[in-house]
Length: 350
Ligand SMILES: NC(=O)c1ccc[n+]([C@@H]2O[C@H](COP(=O)([O-])OP(=O)(O)OC[C@H]3O[C@@H](n4cnc5c(N)ncnc54)[C@H](O)[C@@H]3O)[C@@H](O)[C@H]2O)c1
Ligand SMILES: [Zn+2]
View (cartoon, rainbow, N blue to C red):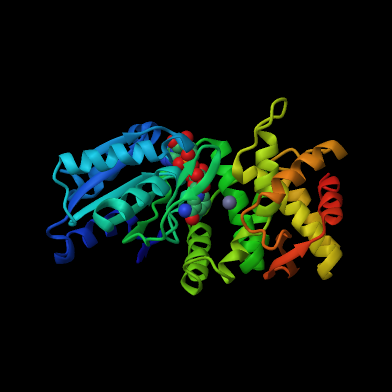
């Protein structure tokens, strides 16, 4: 897999050069977009990457709605109707939803064709476009059916972020904080200081650093059996908080924000159980509060959140497992946590 990260030369320019090479002389391209990336990103891509000028494109529904087996089926039918063979390359121009779907379609079509990710959301750039996890949802259960297939190329072009709504930027920032917390405390502090300064600028070098950490972790454990679990820091709580927020009467929280709140709980338990310095919890809470309002859960709420945690896919032998941290940059995976401790952590968010 080739990852094109931001540098002094344009990422799209480098993609153009790569695709002009002999390896791709027989390739036929099929670009997936959603409504937003169709209007904001497609023209920029095509005007910079000559090889894609004759590509066909297909627009899929925005967000999770596209991660549906019925949409994948439509795409397979379209590929067949246009005689797409194994030289066809699917180009995913969009956020994590488009790349999860496009990767899935590529992995299934004729037992696997190549795909290229061109992430246009921050979550896409630092997380979803890297690592080869592809998926569709099954009903309300996210990412339940999918394949591991690495993208042929991931091309990160931060200028696409210019049109991304602020809330989507915040979502990505929380995943960046997570990645730096588990792997690069210096970058973590730099990003926190930018957030605390009140002017949020997403620096291309930060995106590159984050993408490189993800790629390095994936390389060690491509199928997510051990070390890759460190990327789930804050996610046992985060997924449950996200599901709870979608209950009637609650305000729905997007994934990144829910993980941002979940990381308070994970840091709290890290202090209690692994001796992480209390100051790290306080500092993180201060930073995170700049981006999301910290919820105050009642005891009844915590019961519902715990019920979602019991369903979490990382559980084994009936235990709820979390990633915690001994020191910043020193995560410990798969720790079974007692339900009383989980409950207390949820009550200590504010
Ligand atoms: N495969 C993985 O390893 C992995 C990792 C993390 C997340 N994911 C998946 O990714 C999805 C979340 O990713 P996401 O937040 O990028 O979702 P998304 O694809 O829905 O994008 C978020 C929103 O931003 C819009 N958008 C994207 N780029 C834009 C741009 N440049 N300008 C304007 N609007 C733009 C999209 O249309 C959408 O409305 C989830 O389904 C999650 O499960 C996968
Ligand atoms: Zn996440």
